[in-house]
Length: 392
Image 1 (tube, one colour):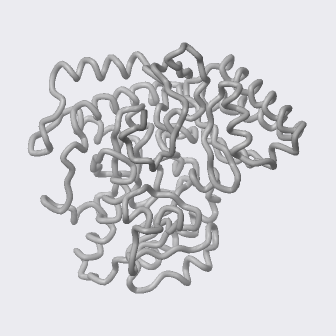
Image 2: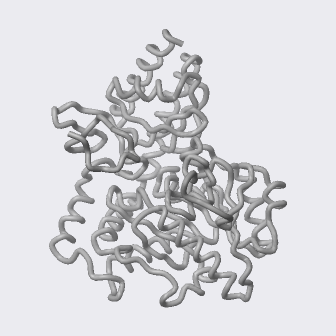
Image 3: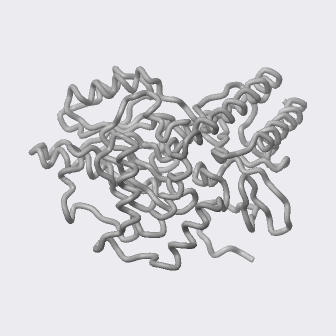
């Protein structure tokens, strides 16, 4: 039977009936080790009992009331994010791309409020990814995402990744801000160098423009820090968060300093469902676990164990694996073979991973994955490499 869905996701074959911890199960009972986690969404695995309990408890009280009224769970989550980061204010949305869109509006409104109505242009880096709505695809300017959707000049400029001279040259008196990912996700799990981040921060301060970090994928513990910017000590003016923030329940957020967020007065932006009681109840449950003493430290010790195992396989199978990139549990594997071939070989061994740019794949396991599950993944990767080495 032909699906009634639009065909923009192709025709996936695998179907999962349930998930538990690090595993997904088909209707036939086959078990797959999940290193996709909804593309870095299920940060604590599938059906974590604390998240399930929070959602069940809230679902018996109130699902939605609108932001016309106070929502205690939402105010609590906002305050926790403020206490844990550079931010003074938070706006909640439903997704990462909406968070990015809101950040763009904040950038432009900030300059407008200061009498600089022409400062509307925003600069992004090559091979970036900021979401699928119109402004984010215009920022990234990937032809695969923009073809058939954009006409004219949407107000975004792109510069080569890591080139501070090109960035400075691209800035004009119409530039409002810069958006970048501390760790590029779709672009191939590329760590943006700390010295470059510092230079960008200094450039923004010098020229009076705003710096926005897109941490939709790298945030919420995946780097070993609550947000990856904290590894460098270089804070942005705005930050987009989503994915892991809800542990599987849709939520997005823009974090901002007081100075930057002040012009966002009543009526300047809004969201029907953003920050609803269900989403923020689960978001608080996620933070309960991530901020527990020793949780992130233990997670990163296990991440180091996984990375050490991958490093050995890179040496053993140079015809398949070239390089390991990223940070913490945001792991990129640059392939010597086709990344599609490696993904299929892993899937045949019931290990699920995600494709990325630069002929890479991504490993994005749950932050609380066990050492035994890591060993299972390494064994599947080894078997896949052995099989592909024969045909290389």
